[in-house]
Image (cartoon, rainbow, N blue to C red; front, top):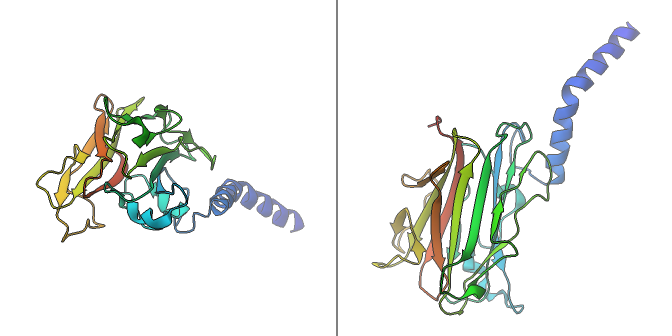
Length: 248
């Protein structure tokens, strides 16, 4: 009987050890609200306020106001990410953005998601800063620090600023990145959110429901959008959904 108990214990340990290791790593990351993590693939999009000159008055420049919690930055594959916003007005500071792809079980081996972030030609380069303009989103099984460099949208009074961001997928034909990019403001000119997918007037606010209009970034079909940082009144609301093309 003793040998049977020992054998059963070893078998349970062998079956559940990888799962326990994964959940320990999830707890270390404080991913508290990702029930069942990490059974699949998680797309990481982190957007937070960047404070310049110790002036916190522009914290509402980036949403969610007050910054994202780590668990909010990760979205399961096939679902829409949290609504994030970039105000394009004249408040101090700006928004820092970064990306990561968590794939503990290697479901998306060979997938490459490339991001290019730079100022539009002829515009103020100080409005769109990063250490690397062109980079592949890190595709990792369990590295909690495998983020892209920060992409900085300087939305204060720097004149003539426009940041351009392009997403290019390669390596697989069965995956796409849906991008919802909604221009919010009085209009009729919504060009501060270049290549927007929809518009909203100030009396409305984006719904948490899945958007009905979005871009499809996939192999052979890169998607580019832009954010004007030239003291234009309005906001750009951004969401992502990494999914298999065959999925609804």
